[in-house]
Image 1 (cartoon, rainbow, N blue to C red):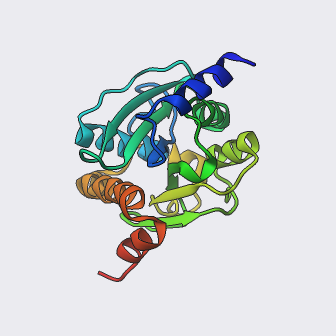
Image 2: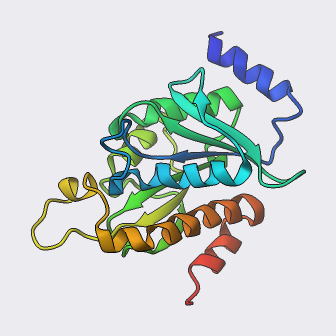
Length: 210
């Protein structure tokens, strides 16, 4: 039995790790040079959630930074995580976190940028493929499971003939930055709704016409 297996057993025996615990992973790349990129919007969302629950990110035994807290007293517990590695190596840290906390993939919420959704739009789904997203691709490979929930944060398609990979590795435009706080807030609201109400109720709320 390895170290992570022992830690998982301890977590299962810990009454504070309730069935209502959710692992929320914000995808992105490490380092200040990437922090404001479109590809890092998932990490921006978990930063917002950490601020809401009054938690700080700390180095974790897995290759991640983690912040933990409750939506409200007696409410769902959120384990917020950002990998220490790059986007295309997201799978190992996510798999290790699931094992550490003794959680199944159906208790995982991955927040990520989505090219196929217009900017300033949030969509929610469970299951499915990776759609060309390297972070999702590596999570699917590492966990061998598609049954996790995705909060898809729309960044839109690149203009003209700009390469999609270059587009997501650039910062949001000036016009987008004016609206970005609202988008991040909406995505954080969506995570809270999934944890609190369930996916179907959250989809009804966020997919309904304004």
